[in-house]
Image 1: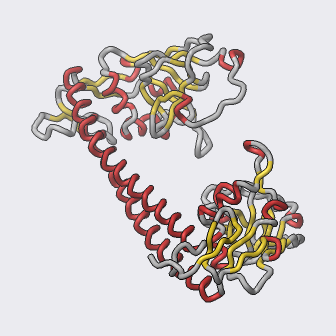
Image 2 (image 1 turned 60 degrees about the vertical axis):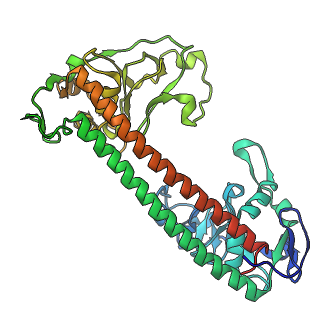
Image 3 (image 1 turned 90 degrees about the vertical axis):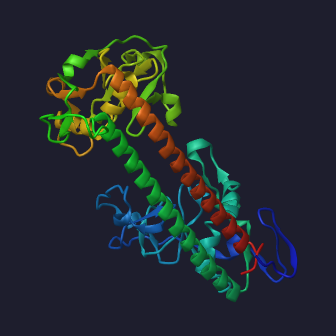
Length: 419
């Protein structure tokens, strides 16, 4: 891409040089804080890092706000900028709507005719500017927030208005193209994940060999199964166990998408993990089947390949030697089995439902001979390995596209390249 003919030192550490004809001014001379309250009838807004400041009703993970105390919320006008509590992680948010928002946020409006909001909107979300924000924080760890006094003293690059307009239009077009490509690749990943699930489902329900003799399973969501597969009640293959007092064992977790993993591999934090806290946690041996009692109906289950301890709220089952550990993990996490856990769970909420062992233990399970189980595992692992490699390749392409997008934005809004 083209560069400008002449550059100068901007005096801005996070930018370096800028085109010679660009100006640089302090933040405090460009923006003024808006702190208007007592507008209870306006839309309730929320600040998001991916979509800017939008109505709370449009945010998927919204928390319903009770209609009290709205007079104390701050007014935000379309085109304003909102410094949220964690803006230093993802940039200052642009307001696409007028409404009211938490009084804990800082609301800024442009206070000069030398800046276009569309240029500022992109500048504030650039990697270069986010890097600046990270130098303007106070507090430690979770309590970190942007120090407005530090931010006010920072210099901001200001191209001529026609260039600001050209920069915004160019980057909006280019980022839209990149985002569209990323979206298409994400859909490819979803299709591959769906295909992987169907491969596993067909294998563990006996749909691989089209030439074998089949019989009715008697279960509507499973259909026919191979004639040589055995039908057993759940309790014939699994026995409940609960051993406590193993506080020194490794902590394990059960995830919807991963099954049983080490707690340390889940990226979570646990406070006060003392021996007293863990005294009632249950021992899990390698090969045990673990179910999250309230989330099994969603698929939060798995065979453990680790020894450790899990929450007292989980159900631990010792598995019969009739089951190959790897085959059982695929089978028990398959959608056909998850449907069975759902039937055997009860509850009034939409998220948590308690698993009823007395119902589950009578449900039928269909298993092939051990030799066939091993063959099925080998088939699944070969297919899944190939699919996962395709997914990893596409994820790498997405990462490269996003990195290119951020690099392009930073280069353009700071004048490193000319549009």
